[in-house]
Image (cartoon, rainbow, N blue to C red; front, side, top):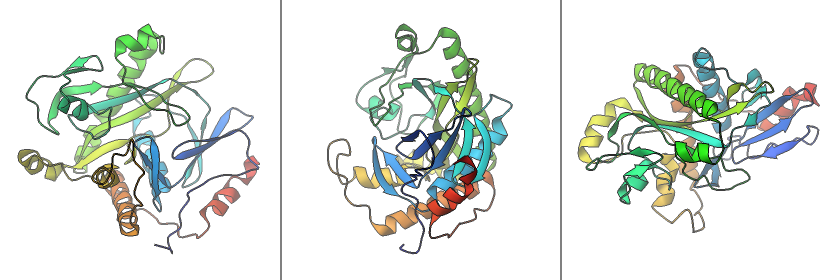
Length: 315
């Protein structure tokens, strides 16, 4: 593992207005654009778990694939890609609601519909689910389960459409627009994923507004970090036996952590090097399966130095 390069931090002092998120680091430029650098950090349970070699490039390039495949559904923030880990995007005012679309009764986090369902809840996010559903069962139709958008390490909280409007987080027109875009993107994602032998079980989208108030898709789309993908051929047998379908999303590490502690209360055990290496391979395999393209590993031992060089024009 020591020979694999890892981008665990993306601090570039020559760039202005840094914002460090859980996974990405942003710099706002004077011209109204934003530099977004995807590090190799992996987060879950509202905390950083580890750094996975090549993960940042996989996410950036997977999102690039999907932005190009969905530009006809809604506009997105992309301006340029100066480096595999970097996108230059339009600076947006991010809407304070994270849009999660779910096609299956699945998940492990406190806001997932499966967690809530198993705790006895049936009405959630403005939707009522029937009794008798099983783990990972397909929903009658895709649903939107919005949460508050947590900033600076806060916790996402479930919201219903009525709460979104009552709290004036979005206008009625904005809610209708993001809902239409999200369901359209999810449908396209499911259709194209199915052709590659994958099930897109759920995903999250972030939207923002530009200076004219237009709603623009931001962040990432249909990546292993923002989405739950299952290997389609594994679904029927797994569902019949009550097991989780084979996947390559964050549940790979999430499950290991959950088996060993309460990730919302306890210290996270050190992730074994072998698991980190396996997870890196999983991300690369995910890229291949999702996009149908070969992933080129950049073995530069100093990835941040290469990114700095690619971004010099913005200093």
